[in-house]
Length: 56
Image 1 (cartoon, rainbow, N blue to C red):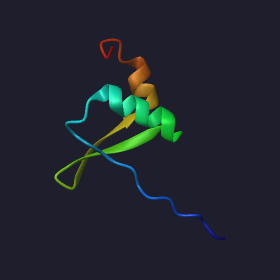
Image 2 (image 1 turned 60 degrees about the vertical axis):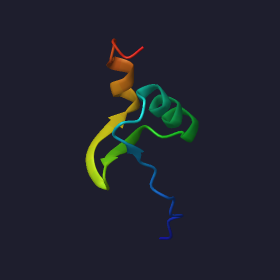
Image 3 (image 1 turned 45 degrees about the vertical axis):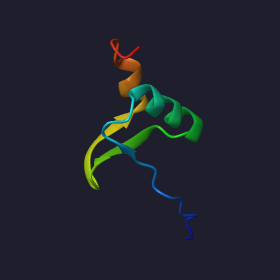
């Protein structure tokens, strides 16, 4: 089985969450890793953005 490898998309921890939401939408992905100084510190998902009433 051959997989078409795609580059990993990550966002920095200090990125504005509205930009992250647009990135998820336009890239057609549901989750994105968050990194700080090259270390994984969390994940943001489209569903977590939808459920966060204080976001916008």
